[in-house]
Length: 176
Image (cartoon, rainbow, N blue to C red; front, top):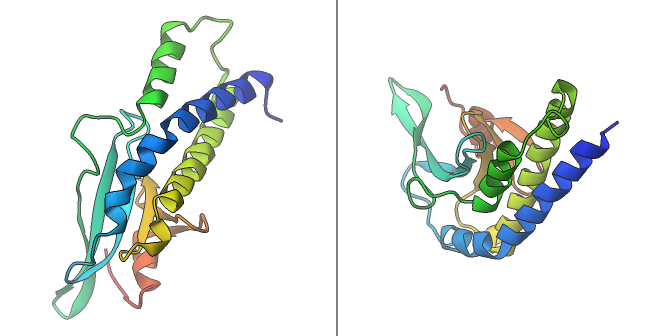
């Protein structure tokens, strides 16, 4: 059972995400028209959600090494370095921590519940932004992940896959 405090905090997060929607959709539009590069299998937006909420755009390539296929990653940015993709969330947490008291601090269990809801809300929001940006027409199969997760999430279905399992969906048997 989710506490009222967690539900209220999640509602505020969803309000902040709603405010970020139009700007975020416009920021994603240029990625829809990208072409697959030679050897590229897919790409993945990586949200640095426990830091500054900046967004990476990582490209995954197949490389032949000693007759075996290996998956290599070219890490990159989806925006400007040091610029948050969701500054509304950063502002929410700045306000929360600046005004935190014993009455407003979440318990450990509430914190776990809040983190789970936060992850779900962000993924659902990002998926809807990608779709609104035209993501279904993307020439590059594109996934989403949270920082250093080493798992990718299908932006349409929400399925969570290892990076190598994502490559296997496109016919590659890879070693990482």
